[in-house]
Length: 132
Ligand code: THU
Image (cartoon, rainbow, N blue to C red; front, side, top):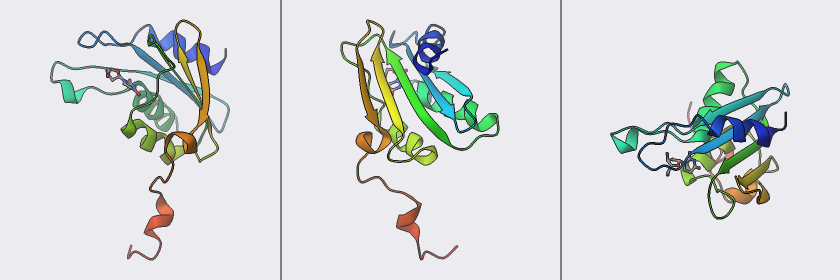
């Protein structure tokens, strides 16, 4: 199954009763395994979590810490872009060249990278020289 198909499949079970905006995400770990996540909303709105965060959590729970590819899909007018927080979360486990495929359920896609989504990102290099 393609990474995008995995994201499309998990989107179906997203819990989004407040926004009615279901999002599916899938990341490929360095091992080649696919991890999926969907958004999980809450009546206390800020407690909701994004699809990308769920996919990353699944990867970490499986014992992997590097991702090589990302796919995100939603029923949006144009390919759905990860929110700012999720861009930083993806950057933690991928690198600037990691491919990210954004998609709509209608079939539109846009290919980018983690670096394209988050230029000038804060990373561990910025803390060099800091006391441990
Ligand atoms: N959402 C995601 O899951 N990922 C994104 O990158 C954008 C937004 C979710 C959060 C919320 O449940 C719904 O979409 C509307 O913002």
